[in-house]
Amino acid sequence: MISIRSIALSCLVVLGVFAACNDDSPNPPDGTPDASVEMCTTEGTTQCGDTCVSTDSDPAHCGGCDQVCTSTEACESGICIPVCRIDGQQVAAGAVNPANACEQCTPATSATTWTPLADGATCGSGQICSAGACSPKCFIDGALYDEGTPNPTNACEVCTPATATTTWSPRASIPLLVGGTDIVAQGWTTLSQAPNTLTYGEDYVRLATSTNSGARTSGQLLIAKTNALDPTQPFKLRVTMQVESVNTHNQLDSGAAILGSFTSPSGNTTDRSQMIYLDSGAIGWADDTQASAFPVADGAYHVYELAVDATKVATVSVDGVTKLTRNNFAATGSIAIGDQTNDPNVDGAVRIKSVEKLCQ
Image 1 (cartoon, rainbow, N blue to C red):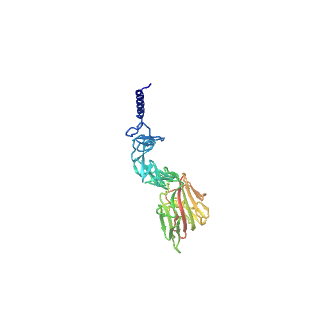
Image 2 (cartoon, rainbow, N blue to C red; image 1 turned 90 degrees about the vertical axis):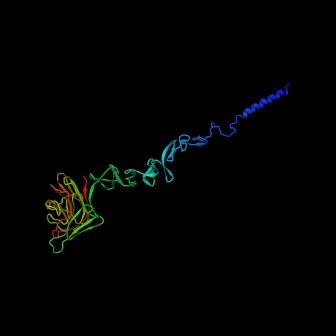
Image 3 (cartoon, rainbow, N blue to C red; image 1 turned 135 degrees about the horizontal axis):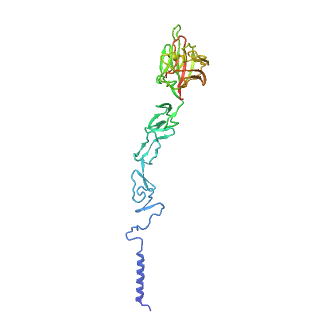
């Protein structure tokens, strides 16, 4: 028979084992979690202290716990990268100001304001930055040029932003006179004798002369431009003009004339011999060596071209049709247009829309 003493001893052993099992509880008396127990279960997060964070994007734990980015940095893919903070917004480095294409976020320069882009930076189709503003200009060889500015070393090249902003663009012609605007400002001088008038229309300059009744001389009005071309080189001169009215020319004199070579005040003998006269129904050389019928004073604008080649052969065409030729054309580099004589009753009225030197 089992004694009462044996039963008591068995009970004490069981109670001891039960107490030992209770000592394995995960919560110690002070309630502090065991650091070996993982609290963060969300994918992509890491436990830093008692907080679950994304070390890919948290600026206080960028790439690892307690790796702090500065106030001018953001955390991207676990790396602190410079950014701007402008007007309360975070802006990525290199981002362009949506209100000004010539400003961008450049943290190394300023992390709190937009930084102007350098002159010449592209800011749109056919536009570049200039002094922090976007405009149609060219930036060539380190210098800024306004649209329409010719190449200082080659007048047959020009700044044309729509074509190119970093190189010169070729052009078909060099404007020497643009109608409707002050000819003096364009480098032309006036040689005149009364009675005459010089007036402007929307797109032309008008020259007119007349003869007073019984006068022994008439009005003269000639506009001239010095150094219009290089006399040692071939050239093409184009004049777009309307002859309103003109009297018949005298030899070496004309009320409506184009001088491809000019010596002030009315041309020397050579200039006047090879001068182009425009009568109401004919065009010719003023020395009367050659003429061609043409309805000059028909109320329309016509394009008159004088081309001189390397062998000094001169060709005159009207609206693309050859009318005159001559050899040994002598150029001075200066040109003139208008009424070059004060002979009585040899007068004219012309409207000049443009004068151009064609690029070869």
